[in-house]
Amino acid sequence: MVLHREFNSAGRAPGLQVWRIESLELAPLPQSSYGSFYSGDAYVILHTVRQGDRSSYCLHYWLGRECSQDESSAAAIFTVQLDDHLGGKPVQYRELQGAESTTFTSYFKGGITYKTGGVASGFHHVVTNELSARRLLHIKGRRVVRASQVALSWTSFNSGDCFIVDLGDRIYQWCGSKCNKFERLKAAQVARGIRDNERNARAHLEVVEEGSEPSRLTDVLGGKPELSEGDAEDDSEADVSNRRMAKLYMVH
Image 1 (cartoon, rainbow, N blue to C red):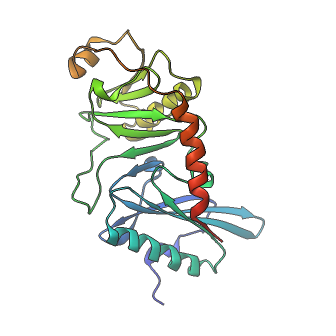
Image 2 (image 1 turned 30 degrees about the vertical axis):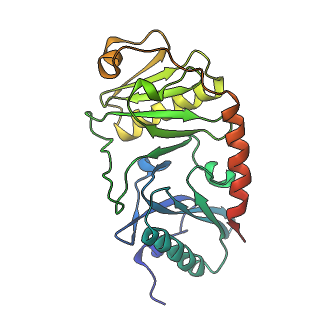
Image 3 (image 1 turned 30 degrees about the horizontal axis):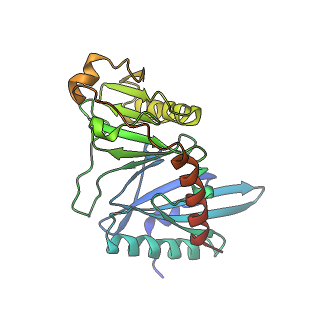
């Protein structure tokens, strides 16, 4: 069997390696992009642990909600081939967006960010390393925190959650009056990750409490309407649901 050129470096060193399926090929991601996933894409993720002269592996393929069937199939095929290349040692996981295993989410201490777009699904990627970027991320969950890109509008907000308003040169961590401490903490981690990794520390980060929005935010979003409180039970219920669903996708 002809091995993919990316397999030459796979599992050589401990830690995480992430590839995205691009034109049905494996394309390595820079570490600055680890933890961010486009909903229109598929990925292969390898985690290597070294113990003495032995290595153990967890091998995942992650499928976005809008990824194509061809991308999904390519990710599955590369996962099987990489497993064979590593002597059948990896534990394989099939990861679906929003229902990832706890093993998978443990790799990303700053949480997981879902972005709209994709390589081959007819979407266009948002260029997030430009200081002109504009997007809104909704922070959700207690134990497993996820940041999902939503419409940049007050209609996306509620008082029970945290949001990140990314305006390129300025990043606002907006905290609803009824948000929980876990979301506040994780929102701070995600916001710092955007500033330090995607903007190379060139953006200014500001924490905004609900009701104290600066003028630049209201210039972009308009006048703030009455917001719903959100459902506090959604966080814990989502975490339980995600953990239950993730168990279905592990293959020994």
